[in-house]
Every structure is written in C-alpha cells, then in structure tokens.
Image 1 (cartoon, rainbow, N blue to C red):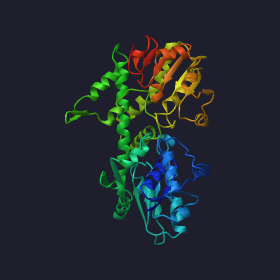
Image 2 (cartoon, one colour):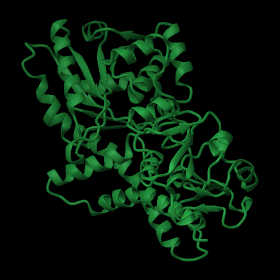
Image 3 (cartoon, rainbow, N blue to C red):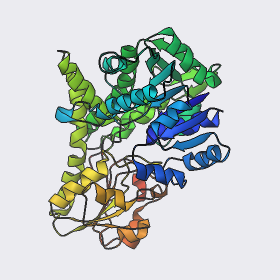
Length: 449
C-alpha cells in the first residue's frame, strides 16, 4: 500500500520505517525542514536501537521517501498516519495544536489534489473524545470528497520500539465507520496471524492508550511508596520486598514446571521515578481531562505526587551525606530517562541537575548516548560533559546514578576509590551490587543503612 506519515519524531519515524520494512511504500512529511533535511542526509534525529540501519535499508530499496510537500504526499498515497506531538499545555492539560494543525493542513492538501476516498489515521496520543468531537468536525465542507477518520494508538517503548512494532501484542482500531477498520486491517495484514485486533470506537481506543500508560505509571509509584516506607525502617530492603511480591503465584505463573515472570515486574522496582515523553504528560493529561468531565482522580493524583518527590529525596540524601552541596563537584551518571534511548524529556537526571545547581553544586555528567547540545537547548548550563565514566568521576566527592546503562553495572567500591576524591555513590535505580562497596560509601533508594 502507498501510505503517508506526518511527523518524523520517535513515533512517526518508527511507524514509517517499520511499515516500509514489511513492503508498504511510505512517504513521510516533516514540517520542520531542518529535521527533514537531516533525514534526507540519512541522519536520524534521535537514538533508537536499530532504527538507523532499518531506515537506510528501506530508503535504499525505495520503500521510504521524504516528501517536501503535503500535496505531493497525498497525491501519491491512499491514506496517512498523523504522528505529531501532544505535549503538556496550560494547566497540565493536553496541547492538541499540532494534531489539529496537521489535520487542517492534510485536509487542505486533500482538497487541493481532489483526492477521494482517503483515510486519515490518528497515531498521536489524544484524550478520549478528541477524534469524534475535535477532529471529525474538521472533515466538513469537502465538496463531495470522502474521507475516513480512525485512530490507531501506538504502544511503543523507547529503546524497544522496533521490536514492539514488529511483534505487537495488540492492534487497536478505533474507527468511525467500517471502511476505516478494513483499511487499517489491510495495512497490518502482515501481523494478522499473531496479534489481537481490538476493534472499537474512537473514544474507547483513545482510553485504551491512556489506561496503558496510567497503569504502568501506577506500578512504578506503588513501588516507590513501598520504598518510602522501607527507608524509615532500618534493615528493610525494598528491592527484596518487591522481588518477593513478584514471586507470588498470582504474578509469576508456572507452565510445565517453569516459572514465567511477567514483563510488568520490571515496573515493580523502586527508583528515582518515571520520565520520558509519555508517562508524565499522559497521566497529567488524563487527570485534567477527568476534571473537565466532572470526575476525580485521587489515585492518579497520588501517582504523580509520589513521582514528583523522588528526585528531591535523592538530592536531600546527597545534602545529608555531604553536609553542604555548595562548591562540591557531583558526578551525574546517566542523563536519559532510561537506557537504550537518548530521550531526556522529563528525565529524573535533568531535574536532579537543576536542584543540585540551585544548591550551588558543580556538575560533572556522562551519558553514552545523550548529546550535550540537547541539555543546553533546554536551558541547563554550566554542566561539564565527559566522554567516559572515568573522566566524569574525576575530582568528584559524590556520584549519583540515574540511568541503568549496562556499562555502569560493573561500578564497585574499588573503581570509585580509584577515580573519585571521595568514593560515595547514591544508586537511584538500585542497579549496583551493594556487597561490592565498603560501608558508608554506597546508598540506594529504598534501603536505610
């Protein structure tokens, strides 16, 4: 099929290259001409494992092209995915301006080229009733041109996006009519033997996406609340507590005498909180949308509150250990909100740097994938970035681990003593082996020494 994609960000580009890899002809349009030029030069504007190689493959065989205009894209396609951002707007509600702007531009292009029987697929995350109440009305006054509108939310994890797309557990189709359902099923026909198609209305499809993100955010904050309590009881290790919970047969099941530990167990871990482009903004958007509908969200409010206090707890611990942060050099290990990505949006590490700088600390930082320019662009200055872990630790009196990069796994007391003035580390993810450190040099979230 000949398909368009609007938006060459994380969701849009992943959608485009994966669809192209299963045989579709994809034309991608990016309104940011600088980003479009990067793609034309085969430079991917973000890090995602395997995407650069797949992008080069599908462009070389002619299955993916960068379109310079919407008119051109529409003329040469049967339908289009809208994959633009829905950031947090005023009062922490969703900002739909990019989605609505893309819809208006796309409809104008459809009218310009007189393209009939076109299908628009919303891939962006939008709150329930957006498709029906805000987007469908934009399809009026089309002079007889038929356009079908549906929503197909994505469930891509950063760092595992290609695998999630190519091995989906579900494909949700929220359609305003039967033709949209048929069209989307045809796009994803490659997966039909191994996936559960959930056919529903647009508002249910929208709610499914938010429920997914709210659920996993809740697991993380639940784990962190258990950690908060554990830290008040000498000797209690919240990680052991959560491991025991996961072993419960209602979570970890047995098949043929083999234990099957569910992937959700990776969200039942204490740490420095969730971040990224989805969980924080989507839970906020859902709570604000609920208010507009006249209902309360005490559970989700608590999820956000617990998450927002995690980084402050780490900084408070740093202040307790050093007595005074002013003038001290502190090493930040990891800037991305999780490993296998360079995404710093809502990253605990970024908030940690802000808080440390407010208290007068000098910051030394290292992340194997994050470009220092992206930190400067969001207003974080006066950070010394390093190209390796050893240089980052040099002359520091405290290190704080924020990201579970594999190369950090081998950090131990001997390594810190070799490279730091004062070998103390706060493990914000509970990632390291406590037994590899001397007493009063290793501190982790969820455990009181």
